[in-house]
Length: 283
Ligand SMILES: Nc1ncnc2c1ncn2[C@@H]1O[C@H](COP(=O)(O)OP(=O)(O)OP(=O)(O)O)[C@@H](O)[C@H]1O
Ligand SMILES: [Mg+2]
Image 1 (cartoon, protein in one colour):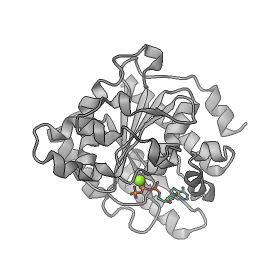
Image 2 (cartoon, rainbow, N blue to C red):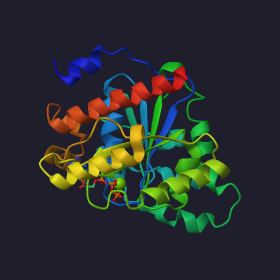
Image 3 (cartoon, rainbow, N blue to C red):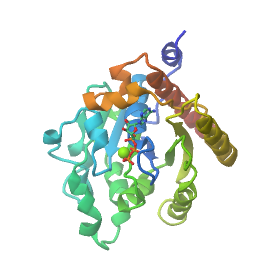
């Protein structure tokens, strides 16, 4: 039995109607797999029955491109939403994956911090936009998961994501400097918790680009597991060329090559995320 069969045999829990679970992919370090995880965890969750919205909060717009949304088709974007000119629903577009939608971003987003200046409530723009997301639709159209793809910095955009989220999911690349910067990220989460969002938690840390043949990769895994304990997901995302090829076709790796080890890993991660959700609800 493959991991995909196992996934399909799971029962399909969804969040209570009207309340999506909001998770941010955050790490101020660049190129660690935030966007890849937003795209492919989103696809895997949708594949097992969840209704997922990816919010692209990075001016680079890589999540939008990776999900096949051409720059010309980004009439309304997360910039328009955060500046207060459009409700979130208006920015949402469907992807080729059933039950997976995206609110795309454009380069305009890079000017947002300057434009908002010291406007009161500027950190809650995204939270307020998401609050209206599920209200005007029938329950079967409501999202059960919102995944926010953050830019590689701890700027106003990332703060908006943290203020809007239930939890943070931190991709960590299996390389020498993996732990560098993690304490700064954890400190920021702590700060947001004590000021903007007391409910914010760390959902988990996902190790990415793991290469079992590489001693360094194995050492990094051991260090991170020792430092962060059970916060680290059991599932590791292997370094896999299919994962890196998929975005140039505007496809998630699960659509590009469902059978590759990268796809299997993201499906496993999705079941682990759902399992953690179950445990949280049972507490
Ligand atoms: N498991 C993997 N195997 C191989 N390549 C990967 C894997 N995960 C990510 N990559 C590649 O590594 C690069 C960085 O990944 P990604 O864009 O997801 O990181 P990021 O954290 O979102 O970057 P940024 O900080 O710039 O937003 C991309 O070219 C991506 O295709
Ligand atoms: Mg990215």
